[in-house]
Image (cartoon, rainbow, N blue to C red; front, side, top):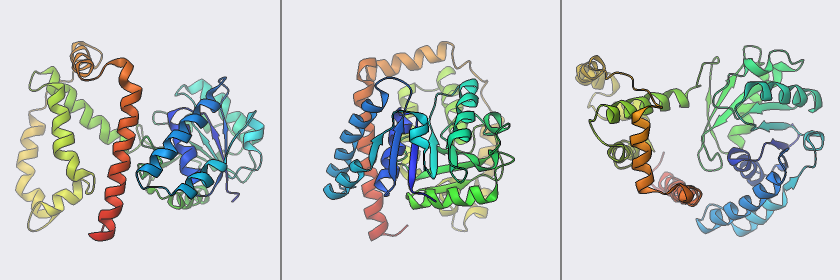
Length: 316
């Protein structure tokens, strides 16, 4: 496979993928039809690469090498020429995706893997009529993918096993931990898990059980501390002397009681959203969100560095 990556769409996800591929040694071409989008992405990437150096996640030499691998593409066909991997990051609008993917399939090299970053659309919905549909799939990251290792590969019913295996090899080469879905499902894996958590958080606030701020405390100062290095099944396995079966035996009645007392579903766009938004704006003004996003990424960098160092000294 040619180690040339075409980034199509240069927003938050696109520019993060660009860093990911360039840092791993790929030549990266960036294309976006919006005027000034590529230039803005390259300027942001320059800042993010500097942050990686400041946080000990990239050497100054590697930063320079990664930056040198990034190049703007004046058109879609220029971006795709000779690319072995195409990462599409267009807005989550089905008709737009269908039109764009017809062009990707027409212009990309026959051997190229075509991957979408979509978190909301099943790959079958925009690849069904493509002549090269067997080389199409979703490679959905959590934002930003150059810091968060998990990535899920979701095939359409016609995606070839060869494509899946090639995609897994590429993602592992970038340093990702891969979730390979056996078949497509709404929300894939990570958003289904996230949806369950956010739904329960909405219910608790809507019912007046606790505030939005207290929900965030429960995660960031509670569950997330152990979830950042052990998933729910490993947590259960370690939380009972006899492991996961012992854990289920001991605590199933607790979970049964919780699930039996399910709170009613709130309207996410109703009064509960007003309450949550008001809580957030007390904590963070709308005009400060972009600055806070950089704070988030720098905190993630510090966490990634810690996890790397802890793996080396304590073990995975």
